[in-house]
Each structure stands twice: as C-alpha cells, then as structure tokens.
Image 1: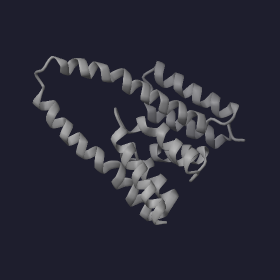
Image 2: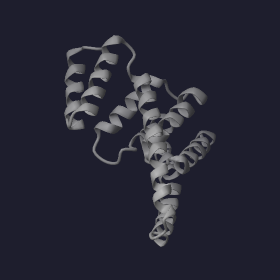
Image 3: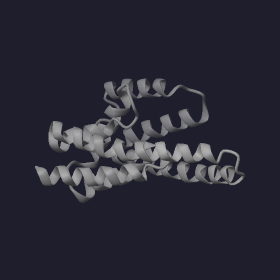
Length: 176
C-alpha cells in the first residue's frame, strides 16, 4: 500500500504543477496515469468519478480525492489531495506576487494573450478525453453532442444541461 501511496503522491504532485489554466486541463494526463499506465480503474469508471465530482457542490477538482479514494481509500484521499493542491497553491501564491509586481510592464499583456489559446486547447483536450470515456454508444454520443451544441450556441445554464442529461439517463436512453 505504501508504494501505491508514494506513486499517487508523485503523480498528483506532478499534475499539480502542470495544471496550467485550471484544474480540468490535467484531466487527460490524470486519466492516462490512472487508467492506461497504472490500471487502477477503467476509462468508464474515471468518467463516472468525474461526472460525480462535477455534479457535487464544491471545487471543480473534486475528482482528485475521488480517484484517491478509489485507489487507496481514506489514505488515498489525503495523499492525492495534498499532492494535487499543495504545490499548485504555493506556485500560485508566488506567481501572483510576481504578476502584481510587474503589473505596469507591457510584456504582461502579451504573455496573458498568449496563454488564452494554450488554456483553450488544454480544456478542449480534456473535454475530448472525458467524452470519449463517457459516450460509449450512439445514445450517449447523441446526448453529449446535443449538450455540447446547446451549451456552446446558447446561454443555457450548465446546470440545466446537467439536469436534462440526468433526466435522459433516468429514462434509460443511452444505456447499453
């Protein structure tokens, strides 16, 4: 068990430092580590944990302690949470001080503008990975496509889309 906890700590500490533009940007690498490399869960289980984390109130990275719980119980929750949120919190605090210190420099706008497409690409990659893991048949693919279109082309609140997806799931549409 100690070896697993050390591995979890190393993985999530690395992910913590790579979470550039928000926590969801590391989802593809997180899934690759826990599903493809270490085989601690299936892609469908990872997708289900992500959906559960997104439906629960609280920070959007609730999937981290859920993965820790799935892999190593309460010890896994502690290790993954500290490893994921500790390093990034320290780096964020340091970066904010520097960002504020150089607030009048012209290069700051250039850096900020350059980070937008990087973040958008990372978030898009995360969406593709989660959709691939969650949409396993034509019914769920159709539901995912409808929600994606509705949320990107209208001002529909994401919670309404989530509720509509839950209702469709309760009807059995998209179930194998």
